[in-house]
Image 1 (cartoon, rainbow, N blue to C red):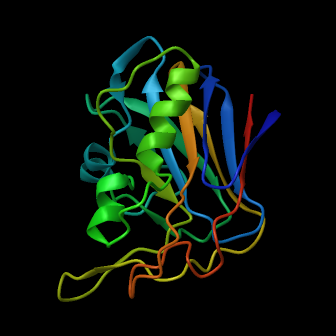
Image 2 (cartoon, rainbow, N blue to C red; image 1 turned 90 degrees about the horizontal axis):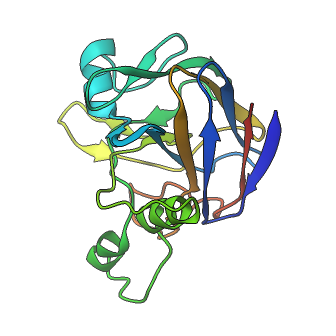
Length: 200
């Protein structure tokens, strides 16, 4: 596998051929990884957590689960998870509008911008920001339906490994969210750090 370092608060796009694997690691622990995937032969087909959880009957991806596209076609299989299932498929990618809602008016890096920049680096223009799979993200739905995302407990060196079921372009964003919002701290407890992506 070839290693790509995703710097803190940035994103990278990586082609992954059918049958190959991609591993995402949080070397320092706790860092949320927004994970997007596109059919390399048709960018109108992208990974869809919503279509996936209807099939798996779970809002947390587990080893053996197939992750589906918005056309309900298998795109990836989750093969390994050393993060104890601490993942999320509910939170939309952060964007400038979210930061403004939290009172941060100044420009701030975001997963939506990281996706667009990473795909632009391969010559692609993205008009829609799909819902990502947020690996290493400690989201809970409370009994009353409340959604919280407290500090991430994932240990240093934790990883997930997925197998591509079609030719893909995957994008991994080191989520830049660092606002100390009660019940919504995500990365804020330990700061934003780099990710490693091994593919091949």
